[in-house]
Structures are given as structure tokens and as C-alpha cells.
Image 1: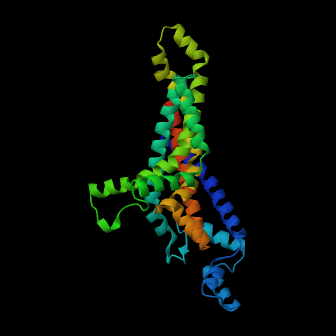
Image 2 (image 1 turned 90 degrees about the horizontal axis):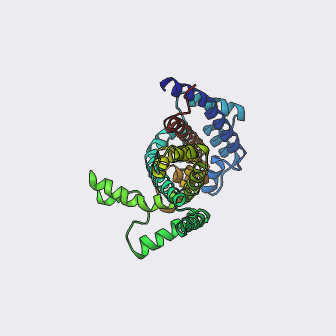
Image 3 (image 1 turned 45 degrees about the vertical axis):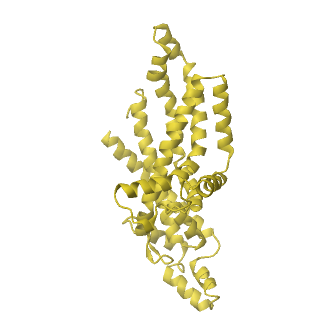
Length: 322
């Protein structure tokens, strides 16, 4: 297993390098740069001053030279300097990485747990009113925009009922410590997690239901029944594990979408994560910070997909490490 993980990590290096190159070239195509934005905020500036700013930021060099220098610095984990934030990019990313991982982790736990449970129950109650209720609810939730769900949750549970805070990660003026701070962060985490989880919960529920029904119609289930095994034993020991495989695959694939969705959710709830930082850096034309966020996101997606591959080996004994 150790050599397998090392081999997979080595295989991901070209993938991450390709993502870095594509993101760098795409940002070069975007109109405007940090120098023009700073000049515009100052009410205008002569061309000579703008050229000096571009030279200071390294934007006066050819694109291929900038790309080569960026990759060379990336090899030593030097992600550059954010002139807008006046801080190294890596330092800013590490400050925001914790809240993003907390939101992503809680979202994966809630969406996968409830989605798999709902899909399992819908498959067991197939063609009954309970199955119809779960299926219709999943379709409605899947079609509802994330930003609308977030705003409605804030309106109902924060403003009308005053059960949860409207924004932020914690109440900084309360100076909580220890378990009190953990409870406070968990209290702030409820609404963002629900908002981001609903879409993926509906997706996993529908996928789990279809996978369960497909597995229950295969030959090995008929053989198990012929051997005298009960339906409960067949479902728990065989069908459920095999039905989980496409759900786990989708969870790994959706990690990138989860990071994209967190941009909207973090903007609504002012959650201090990478999504909100990306939103701010985009309008500020802080390309060094944006490239660092893209690089960090690519690394997270690669790590999650590696974890999915390892989980595959434990879920399905037919899969062997070659």
C-alpha cells in the first residue's frame, strides 16, 4: 500500500504541473492587471508610473519568462507575494486553509452520510410513497440554487428566529477559549454546511438509489438468495458495499465542484476561507494570490482522489493493487 501511494503521488505531479500552466495562461488572457487597478483606485496615473508598477510586479517580462520563473519558485513552495495583501501568498493560504477544510469536511460528512442513507431507504422502499417523497425532494433540492438556499436560511433561522449567527466563523469579541470556542465555531458552521450540503446530498441520494437497485438485480444476489441468505444479510454484506463504489467515485470527482460552491457560500456567510479569498483577489486583480489558490485547490483535489482510490481497495476486494 505504501509503494502504491508513493507511485500515485508521483503520477499526480504532471497533472498538477498541467493545471498550474493552464491556470497561469488563462489569467494572462484576463483583461487588466494589478497595476491598472491600483492606478484607477488612485484616480489615474501617468503611463510611466504604471510601467514602473508592472516592472515591480514582474509583469513587464514576456509570458513564457513569467511562467518559467513561477514554476521555478513553485518547486521550492514559493508561491509569490501578494502586493494587495502585503503578505506572502503561502502565508495567506495557510491562514485560510483551515476554515475551508472545516467547511469541506463537514459538508462531505453531512452530504455523504444523509445522501447514502436516503438513497438506501429509497431503494428499500422502492415504488412506495416513501420512495416517491425522497425522490421528489432530492430533485427539488438538486435544482435549487445555492445562493438562494443560503439567503433563505439566513432570513429564516438568523433574522426571523435568531437561532444562528448571520455570518463569520466565530464571535471574536467574546474571546472564547477551549470547548466554548469549539461550540461557538460549530454554531457558526451549521448554516454554511447545510447550504453547501443540500445540493450534493440530493445527488448522492439519487445515485445511491440507482446503484442499489442495479446491484440488487445482478446474478450474485440471486445466487445468494438461492443459498438461503436473508435479504438483510445480502443487503448489508454485499449489495451495500458494491453500491457505495459509484458514490465514492462521485464524491472524489465533486471535490473540485465543492471548492467552487464554497466560493458562493463563503461570500454569503462571510466565512473566512479560500473561497472568500478567491472572490476578493479576483476583483483586486491579485493574480499571484489567485494562482496560489488554484494551486492549493488542485493539490486538495488530487489528495482527495488518492484517498478515494485507497478506499476502493477496502470496499471492493476484487480490486487489487498492481
